[in-house]
Image (tube, rainbow, N blue to C red; front, side, top):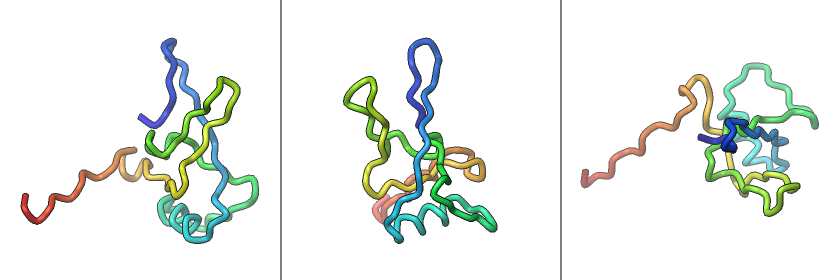
Length: 92
């Protein structure tokens, strides 16, 4: 689960801007799989599309959730919001 959910069932969503690093930005665009996708300074991606380990929780209650360096959105409707199982090694 990529959301931060509290005991009362309230889930916290965050929205992240596109990275300025061109290589990571390109990975985001490929992962999102949208045709004619125009990115503006206001374009955001919801935290639900990131793995929990890609999100840094704030140190304080008023802090913002941040993405870890190099994080790429991976959870989408086209993959049922899940990641493919890891490929078995040659010895398995």
